[in-house]
Length: 114
Length: 110
Image (cartoon, rainbow over all chains, first blue to last red; front, side, top):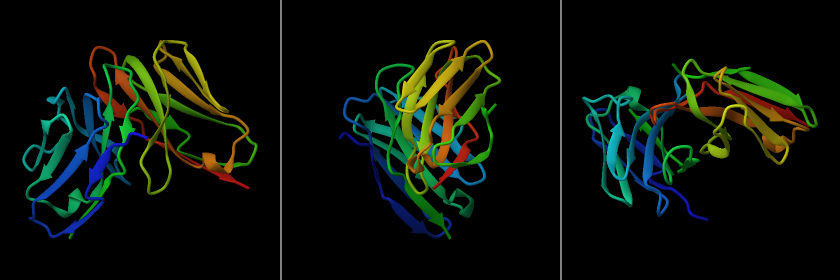
């Protein structure tokens, strides 16, 4: 089965450190989403790309978060500097085609900022 | 702006039925339903694209009332495996903006 691959699965680091999370979408999928999940906020959309172009990153704190798609097989989400409130599970999802397509989620990166 | 789901939580016995509702304040292009088990990623269940559309997936089905901007997920003859948190995801008409609902925790007891 084709899967979305996220690395690392777990990350523990100290406040102020840079964190980079990576996502490999399903081959052929042209839309990539980044979500953050916490108990308090549920599933929040941070940013999404179509054909590698950012379409919306309004859910992302601009001063410390950045998202890119260097190529069609890799999406990255960076936090610099990290803060304890960034602790959450970060999911990447990919979808094919245009609107109305199911999203396939990766297993997530569980991030803890001490 | 986040779609509101009701109920927030529900406990069932095996074999009982449940309905989960999703209500949006925005005009919708589509509604997606996902189930997430503890410690796992959300898993896609179904998409509804048209007003009044209904779909079925084994003993799980859903409806979408475009005019009311609401969708409902129906779980019949529930099984232990149905336990988890159910999310609706909505795409607004006119944009590709995608927002997940508040979630409904469902637990099925033997």
